[in-house]
Length: 476
Image 1: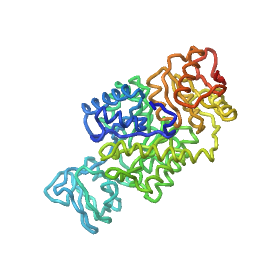
Image 2: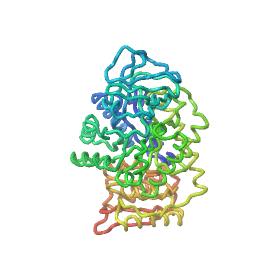
Image 3: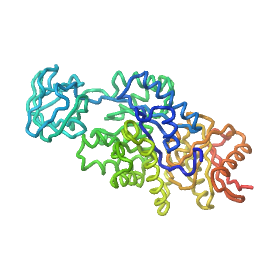
Image 4: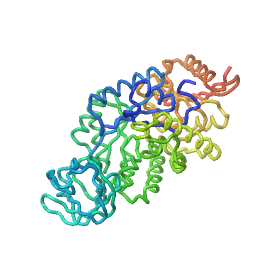
């Protein structure tokens, strides 16, 4: 069955593109397996490679007939180790490690990509290497060196990440390369742009201002991976278009035992403020090499969905893993099984949304209530911007819902909205032809029968002089 299909999971799947899945054929395969949005990580590769990937994604999207979205992930101020003299370096507990400003031939003297690292460290600070697998404590700081002791041993390699829990850094959220990548994304009509290491709402506003100055309507996704972001969570959610729970760095920056609670809190705030939220990092980590996930990983995906996540993201599983399509298929299976359980205990959310006119929000929610009351077979949201579909997705209605639009950009953005199946239509202003098209689609893709009901909701501006129009259509 071609996509969009009512067999698709309601929770959306984001897959990172990398060497394991970067051909047009492989991208098509992932779309068929259930990918809604492809992520390009600017921490890897160069501009020319990113341009090739965008071109291939769009060709795969055209071939598959599905308007897959593209998310560009800005690297942000990720601090990394320099080139190690001995690679890898085994760090044993109690060993002395020194950060220096200039590379030397001493194996235990390390450099960093952040020039101001040493001057911003203080005795007692914690330094975490390689996603937290190695931990250090700063013992002494001088002008050109910071001496540390290993408190948690392990192995590190060149260019691996450095995390500094609790250290106040002066580095901005948007580096020069991020600005250049954001401008490039605006010129290439990228759908979503995620900002790494957000610390305050000002970081989000800065990126939005940059994009608006280049006439971009890309949605800004703020990645929550710093303690400062948790302190300003509500303001960040208010200013962003969506949120990503970036558990990799978050689990290093805060106590790993607090990460699950932080994830639940972030999702809850997003639900309250009606913003889409993505859960990311190590969701099916074992599928880098295995054809099956662990039971804990399957539970992790399911719990993210039960908490209210709109999307789950695959990183290395698709970018460099041995089984990219299998990982997507498995994630889709877990999602669908979890959503079936949700049907048994479905609580509707009737909050209004700031994104649309209050009347639009109220009518959209009322349409969902009507559809559930009369047991409609289908809800159709006609929308130019996607905002009306955005409101509908927050109701978590389990009635199949189509988001119809004549805008390809809107269709791609709706790939981040829970339960919304994007479908292109050129008949939004011709009510009769529009209803006929949706009925034909329903006959082809569902068990729509004579006398079944379809609830139509038209978005603001589709019907002249009306905020919204709700129509209950009985199939002839």
